Image (cartoon, helix red, strand yellow):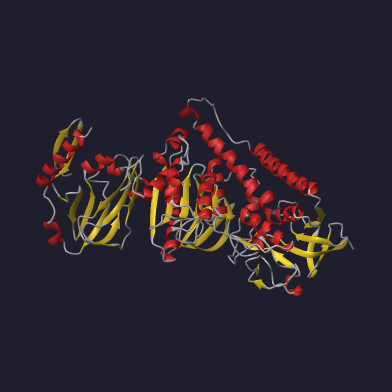
Length: 149
Length: 468
């Protein structure tokens, strides 16, 4: 169980796990053995609403950093999730087919999207934000959302 | 020997009786030779009785949700004998209706089994054994189709149902195995599921409804069925059906080639249909065949100048509405016209839960033809009428030509998809564009607004949900 950085904006609580790295778009990357597990942050899942369907690119898909790795359909929007790392999709979370609401319930745990065999993790990870940096960025984004009419 | 007619139609199903009625409208003296009941497969053991079962089971499921809508219905339960009566009553009424139409149009209906003995002559064997020959200046062949019998061991075991037998429901199986994930298999899967069966579907191709709809629609349907507890296995190569205890065991190779097995107390083989062209004297009279189907040109003319062929017996989708179009085209041509068939706007409709309907090209087909394609989707979860109905599963997908926005295909998964597709069919037929759809006012709150929203998606201008 990771530790979290936490902030409250308006009436919403947003958490950032301290054991992983983040893309500015709100996708986390966690090295697990040789592979990188990826998923949506708490902020991103709250922003987009209850997930009805999550279509993750199948095993074997080759992705560049920033390529769409998943299409999330919520009740209010369709959102493409850009991959924070380049490589090949090694495993898709089997829960995504029948219970994609795990993305909302446990975005840093059960709601993971995919495991990626990274092509060049050292280079890709250098472009990602550490938890504190993402936390600041996210807090700013959350305040902007809250101030929208 | 009966008097010569202008047009003789072999077979009184949707292709045949429609051909007869059209020819009569054009002033022809027409005879229809039918060995069972008019209306053919569609009316008697196909479209009509299955939709009666679907309607009843939909009502059953809605009644169980009545409290969601502020209505108290204590216990909604199926009454199988009454269900069979309702189904048969609907079929009988429609058969009677067609018989009445033929009579009123002055069409002679000759009961018996017919086969060709000459390019203008049909020999008819009645069930009393008495034979007559019918001569006509023109013949239209509409013998329809039969249940396919692929060489899988065990399909002919007693108790392995065909679609005809599956219509006769006297008790509800605990676990129904459906071999074949096409239109027929899926419709029955949903009927039996509603009645209380656990259902396993085995489909050979990588997706359900292969060739019948867009991939996105087929994948989403499979996902929805799985979420409801159906076991949906695609890429399954069925090897055999065997008896197992009081039920059946189906052995198959799964998508990865691993030998597997599923057991259930009832099995339904829904592996397609074949043109019914054996024993009709066709090749003897010189009618060229295309495999089991009768070979025809774009006027539905066969290789014999006085003979046309229509419906399931010729190639093309085995759909009643396609058969009816064929009937009208062949009738006009047999009466001196030269109309060509145009199947562009023939929709595929599947009465599953939720319904599926497709017309025109799928995204993959459009891309394969080299078109510059843009697709736009709109979920029913964003449609107010769907929300009011409590039926928000599904989506509309439009496949458009990227430059002009011409609608190349429309695909719908959702409530009343089979009705909604008419707009898509019209769009494809007229060469309408996404802008045409988007600027046609769709009443609010109605389900067709989902078509409107998808059309707006072509311009990245959806109003009621945010596309990515």
